[in-house]
Amino acid sequence: MTKNTADETKKTYAKQTYTKQGAAGSAAREGARVMGTVLVTSGTGKTGRRVAERLAALGVPVRAGSRAGGVPFDWQDESGWAAALDGTEAAYVAYYPDLAVPGAAGAMAAFGRVAAASGLRRVVLLSGRGEPQAAMAEEALRGACGEVELTVVRSAFFAQNFSEGALLDSVLGGELVFPAGSAAEPFLDIDDLADVVVAALTGDGHAGAVYELTGPRSLTFEEAAEELGRAAGRPVRYVPVSGPAYAEVLEGFGVSGPEAGFLAELFATLLDGHNSATTDDVKRVLGREAKEFTAFTREAARDGAWHG
Image 1 (cartoon, helix red, strand yellow):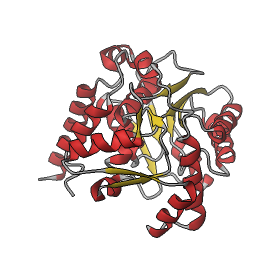
Image 2: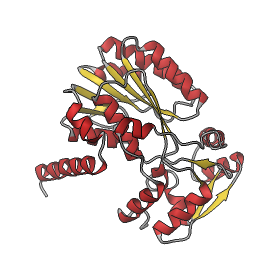
Image 3: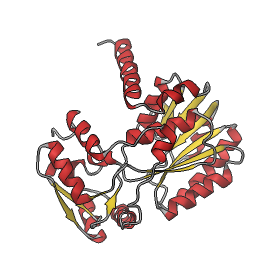
């Protein structure tokens, strides 16, 4: 396959994917104003990649920033931010590793100042649902970006964490070890998140909005494990553990002690039941229901997520 043929295949796939999932729906495609270049930070990550594909399918110029990509962008190196933002009209901000980490608020304030100085018109920020520290980072960005339009998208736990994220190996191994107790979580399909982000980037009426995105149904991790097992065709058992015990599990996989402790504490805090309620914000933005967890598992199985 030649490079040109491969590029065309990728474009066709992106367009088909965008159309199949509705993205911002036909209303968004018809009503979206003509956009200038959009910077997608963490452009090769789970959310950034999907956002970039959808924007490209709409004909919006995309600048996918990453630490090792063609557009250098590193959250730990502010010196490259101005160049990445130069000439752009909007930006999707997905901070790595998480808005709840120490230093995130400072990074958001710095990014806001650079964004305002660059003449950026619009920012859509990915945030965590029910995370007090993330809310502080949101406020830091809001206070620093001046006249830049800001939309905040707070997400529930990603369904794709089971199929292409940190919990994939657990599903493949048949034991889902996690510090969630018996709390229920309204798992969100990342495709729905990407569609909402694109709608906010390309359409008007979202400035100042804070969207809390969830799936349409809350499940415990035990219930999720059962559905994952049915779709994968192999038994998957949920094993609840304490935060410290989960930190030890992570360290066994090579995660550093401080990072393992932070992640374990974060998950235990987020999955204590206070985020169990669902919202209709996906429908408010897109005009359709959010994807059901069962539908996610079936699609992931069909696409070979758990063939390993």
